[in-house]
Length: 398
Ligand SMILES: Cc1cc2nc3c(=O)[nH]c(=O)nc-3n(C[C@H](O)[C@H](O)[C@H](O)COP(=O)(O)O)c2cc1C
Image 1 (cartoon, rainbow, N blue to C red):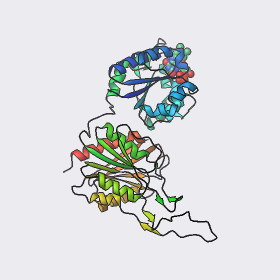
Image 2 (tube, rainbow, N blue to C red):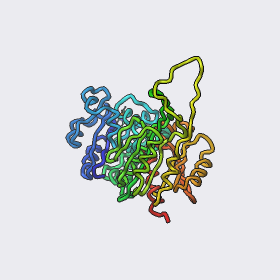
Image 3 (cartoon, helix red, strand yellow):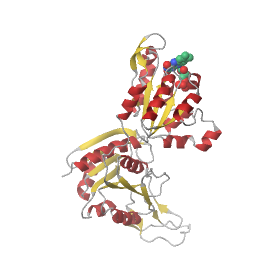
Image 4 (cartoon, rainbow, N blue to C red):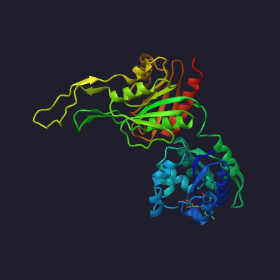
């Protein structure tokens, strides 16, 4: 956990005092901890205590102008490698389950694609209540991870399930889900992401709906797995992941040129960019004027970037993406065979809540002999799982 950035959410339960020890233990392991308290949590423990323990000003409100100016709630969400909420009250979990953004913690949790861990703490009847059970099931189905609760004597004097896990046990459990690994240590990985835009004239272009989020998450996950990562990005509005070298391109032709220049010597190429299949034969030098007649665009096929990279000798380990809206697995398998690539991640962009510009995705990774399904999850979480699998396939290739 050394150097990891953990956003610790503290909600209003009697176990808030245990979160103080959790901050101390996380920092002992080398993590940076930013505490965000719900308003009710401040009735149990003062922000001053957490500030002293974490060494950072505590955030308690969405409406703190000075704090927002320093690090806005979206930046706060982006800052965190992962979010841990301990204690997670019944109320906070209900809000999270239903996507409320009425306070800072809820807003940050909506604005992240990082893993969120919940350490519930409440009276055993509250924990067993059907409403809480349903909320927990919903949260788990969306990728939230539960830490506990434990069973035992409770602050209310009763005994049962609902005690917050002990801070030391929480830290151990978190350490089992390491974000940083050495799965790709010593390897060079080239990732491409985002759309390509094909100019029609100086003001218009043909584009597509790729946001680049999946590819950026893949680049970040590869970097966290120890790789030396170069990210070739189409025009997107995303920050460069820390430690990643980025090259911006616009058109498919530019993408191809950069890929062919960068790929030699690279171990793994992960091609998630949505490359335009066609471009206009000639870009008009001036803006095309509106007139009574329609116009016909003369489109010519673009080079097949992935197939060109697959021709390199020695050929890097190639992972493609197939964004489809129908017959997803079948089309992806055909692409795998036709283009001489090692793995293909099939992506059903028509699935509700997934695909282009969504924060979540679901993928099936297909190899010549095996396939692996990755259930719907935040794109960063999915990228992490994908990178783990790609690393295993790369290391065991013949
Ligand atoms: C003394 C006291 C102890 C409480 N302990 C808990 C608790 O352990 N777990 C819980 O879910 N709610 C507990 N509550 C109720 C929450 O504080 C209440 O639901 C609150 O609205 C939670 O707000 P928050 O989730 O925004 O922090 C307690 C309330 C009081 C007054």
